[in-house]
Length: 499
Image (tube, rainbow, N blue to C red; front, side):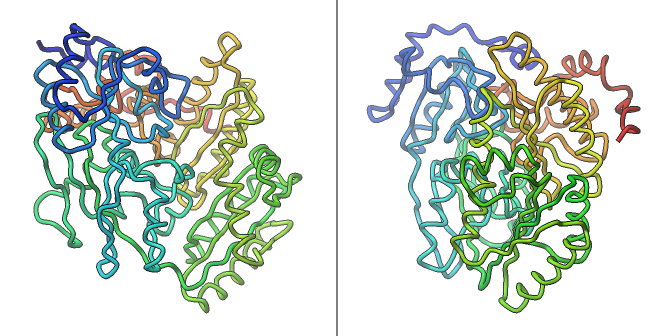
């Protein structure tokens, strides 16, 4: 049985005898759990983007690589699509299941296999939590640098799939910069090794290609990550501003001075108030914006840079600068930022978190654009940014119970992402495309580029069974979308002149 990619991406699914197929899955291994009752499937109907929900055909929780390979071989033989899922904390619908597809949940692959303190590496299974790696490495004076806000729950396999970052990615990079090797299983059940334990490996850099591929090319079964020594000194300051644009300009001035903070985060007034009410981090609720700047490294360098940054921020218009007195206060300031998403969830029935990246110089302009769009659509937006690397996380507040409000929210999100592209940025920095941003892929890339992405996908997965309907749009979809938005690969953005 075969299906064209155009059909599958927009919802055409195989005609499967459900009971017979589940019986086949169950017979693959006596230790493998297969969920198929409706009430057991409900918890898996969405990932962190709860606006989109689908109950899968079944949920499979393997415990061994052989079980993963057997499931994939059976799926390939029957033309049944497979969506791999980690902890389900993703925010782009990347783990959204299919009604007639397998949801392959890797949660039972949760062991840290080896920590090599001398080499500065750890071998882990994909279901290991991000934070658990640093906790296990701590006795050796080491840690794993990428730290998404969801690090207490998100899994390393999902981090690889989405190329996750975090508040310290400005200095230490994204997942792709902090892994050495991944073991994957292809849709044919073949096990492949991408990368190497050495700093480089021969041939094409398939590890970089695979990282951020959102489950379209294979299923991760093991990851070797880099571990870093804990910095000798770490200091943090919080700067308050009466003007959001001034805070945005200050970000560029810090980087322009040749100082690369470990983390440089920005929050606007709505996000500040929500986080302070929730965490009591000591944020100034009367500020229009705050910058959180952390410096780490050799003690002398950190002290010198802290003095320079404080002076620079004062000249940039900061109304108050607070330097954390000790580790407890530093962690409390970070807790407010890392809990900004759940904090916003306390002040609105629903929120929609988007993810775009822009050149740092465009930060004030895009902030003005978001403010204007927010007013036009009649929806509040709380802004939380990885300001140092231009990665934006606007949170649009809405009520899904009000007719048409989700649609207005999606329209506002699309305008923000398209503005990011128009100023020379990208529709995503770390959350991935998933199902959420698939239309904006048509804005970001030309038809030729999208055809190339399809060719890469086909090299790993010719039948397009792995996570179909995500990440790469069909040219037909882009033609329909482009009739309204895109002309010869260029965006008509006269409204940019307003900002």
